Each structure stands twice: as structure tokens, then as C-alpha cells.
Length: 158
Image (cartoon, rainbow, N blue to C red; front, side):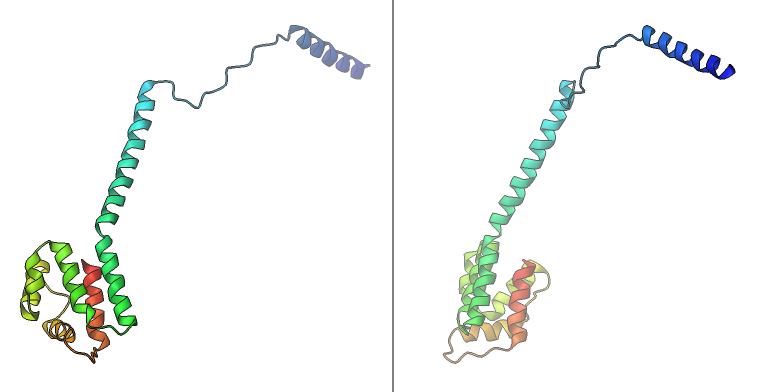
């Protein structure tokens, strides 16, 4: 009999709880939209800052187009063994970078001095510049790979 008493009391207790049960309303769903305008303002400012940063990066990328094109032209001239064009491309890149038209009339020594003045240490040594500038007037141009590497390194450093 003690088992039935025990089971009965549990059943009676459960019945009592069910009778006392009251249905409560479900809580409102949590919104993903911030509750205050300050959060919306902060979110807007972050979006504007990201857009400005991306616009600035794109602007800088566009400004450096001449370097990518000059680098590509030098590589193309090397590939096509058209080494006479390298001096002209080098001067055009320098004119575009520093905006000084006098570069077009410089000889090798003046150009080396100009690069040293503008960059501190020129990536291209005087002997290489002299050889590159002399190639523009030779029909059978030949240049060692170290001189070509110096031009490419110089363009990468700009």
C-alpha cells in the first residue's frame, strides 16, 4: 500500500499543478534593428568610413596606373628584344611620376643625378643608365640582365 499512496500523491500533485497552470503570453521577438538612433548613426558612420577608405584605395590604384603600364611596357620590350624603347619608357615614367618636363632632355649623368636627388639613392647605377640611354641609338642592342633588373627594381620602388 505504501507504493500506491506514493503514486497517488504524485498523481494528485501533478493534477494540482495542471489545474494551477496558466498560459502566459510569448515574449516579443528580439529585433535585429538597434533600439536607439545612436546605433543606427554609428552603423552609418562605419559604412561611410569603409566606403571612403575603399574609394581612396581605388583612387590611389588609378593614380599608379602609369607605373603598372610602364612596367608592362618594359617587360614587353625585353620580351620582344626591343631594347631601344627602354630609355624612352624610363624617361616617360619619371616624367609622369615627378611631373618635371626637363627629364626628357637629360643625358645619362643628369638623369642619374636627378634620381639620386629625388630618391636619396638611385636604384639604377650610372653605368646602367648610360648603357640604357646609348641603346636608343644602336640598331643591334644588347644589354645584360642585371641592367634590366635594375630598371624593373627602380619601377617597383616608385
